[in-house]
Length: 533
Image (cartoon, rainbow, N blue to C red; front, top):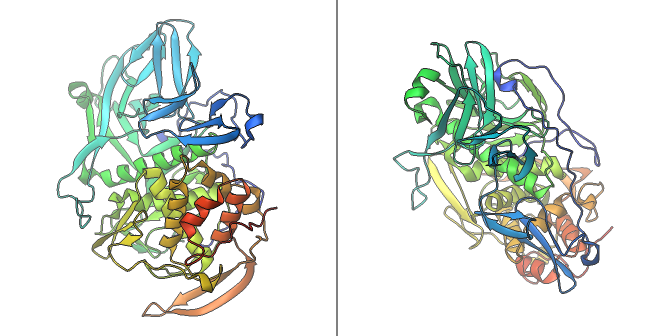
């Protein structure tokens, strides 16, 4: 769910505020690499080479006089040397380093390895490389215990499974002094500088926090320190903290595996894993650019009035300033295990970071059509969840019931699928999952979903008023779920048809759009007559 939004005017961009902060999570290594900008879509005769990589997972090539894009498979990454190709090996985690030979260091930047020369020998260590001898070090692996949906998608698995904690910030301390920091690699490995002899208070701390391009913490999962039922507007208390887990150096010297148990709050680690994946996915799609600095609030036992929701509301908390917030329920449903739900909320974050939200929020239900603006916002978020996880199935647990929606089959475990009717026009109420299914089928018809991300950030989707003329509504629902107190605010708002205009106007095949919308019988989008700027 996305709440009413505030922030920049159309055409402006929110950027992180520089703030003073306290505590170990503030440590950062500022990159000296030049800023990357989003590479524009080009015609075939404008490409600087017959093919190129648009980030670590999208390959672009000229074939038969037309530009074609291809998403690399999950276990491959796009490289440009010696030839442009998707090669085996997952995209690396930003900030991780490694030695490639005795004097060559590589640092992961924007999901790909970048060479750095060492003036002295490069010293290799698990999950890390050093230019020069680092002195005493300690290597280990961080994992966290988590649950998954069972095979029938009816409950969470009864047994927990340890999985690698990738992209977590890890810091070594000697007493109260920070010695070293890095991020865990894809396997959860780390190597940190440590004292030559260990004292009782020397320790390693793992934070559910990740760095942005400037090296400062830009996304994190935090405990709000507010028990029980809370409104989203509740101000985090003095007890609020970024989730972290500590082991003494003595403990790790005898057993280097660092496993966060469920009783320690491994659910927060699961949320951070999804948050880190979303951060990387968006950077892959938008030329390495960061999204809005975001904090996800998860307190076990804390429930929010919105359930799970997102808004680009600024807050200063846990030692820094954030431009956006997620609120996740900490109740007995244990929905923090739903990667799909968490990624859905982060789909709203992507829209707030690179597009424009319809700003149409209110109660909505699975299988129940809602206003076009809300359906577009929620549908995009669900589609992003499936695209980022590379699975057509969305799932969540609410009210003690685990339910699923399959976009590829237009099927749901809890309600009949509601299709639009062509005779009701573009401005009809639509089921948000139908919007998600249209996006899913549109993307599935092409080797790359990159055009959908490009359309979201296109000028036509970020400049009011929008061509199709929709205006946002406010409403409530009565005890039976029926609409009440509906008000047309008269304020312009984008919806699915505007997005499809942006997509087709960028050259996306009309036939693929028609196959997804089925305009003669279902959503009557006129792909042959897009409204282009």
